[in-house]
Length: 440
Image 1 (cartoon, rainbow, N blue to C red):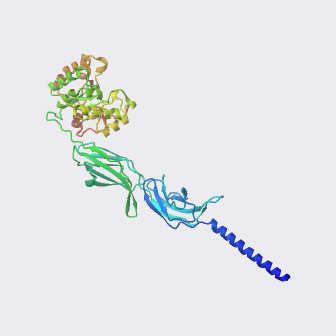
Image 2: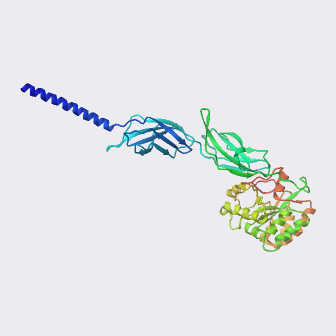
């Protein structure tokens, strides 16, 4: 009987051990989570990607890791809660970069998450960033393109078309080392639309980034020299700022130019031009050049904004049906912002090589002598069309300049005749052949 009790006790102990083992095994199993079987890339852009993966029924959520080819360790990118949430949108990735991605399932525990032992992996490559493209027409039939260089790009693709229908656009490939391109033999006076994108090479395929914003540019035409201009003879450009004025000075100056078949360039203030449309139309009819001198002449140097220039261009166009083709900074204080805006508006800038200081002295003889005693071939001469004394001086100097053999031409004609090239948008000229690069 005693032996039977011992055997019974021993059997019970074995059962207890087995049950304990089973409980322990159940505990281990309850702490584990199945592996994510597969993952895939649903979409990708320049700065992110969307991933999806197979659902794990025992999971409380998922953890997504990433490692670029340039790094040695995986970084936790995001945590997704809920076993049924099997997609994630990743952001803040580097553009044009190869990534190794992996997804693991997890169960939440008091002491931290328990992850699946094996992670589902997938590779992706983000696209090149969107390019920033600028376009200008520096010469007749020529379009000049510039963009921000992407050091990770394998190259660039450009498309351009007259009009805005890219269905018939021409495509040009550009090597990765370049950040500018000149396209020639385009139709002058036509407006072209241009866009660009960078690409990567993956095996033999191209991965294109997004297209840049579309830029548009009107193609310049060759400045046609009037038949009465002789390139072999001396010539100068008379220029007048600040008008049209609210007196007869401006019209008196135009009368003199008409009488002697001469031309000049007028750098006009937008608010004044808006109020004197007939004056502008007279100047255009005589073949004079219309210039921009900001909207209201209220700011100088770094205080001048792009809108100060563009707004003047618009009101001048509204007044006479023609956009200005040149710019002069107020006070001659030129900034890089002005140069950039003028380049965007296809306008060269003109300083001066002979200053009459008519605004200071308001004296007919002083203005006349300042010109006649100092003038030379290729000069750009500064005056103002708002002073009666300037108008009286012009009545004397114009016939005397012509007697000396000077041809009175516009600024654009002066540069084109002396250099053989159209003046360049965004470039400032001191005289016919000298570029004034320094900003004030």
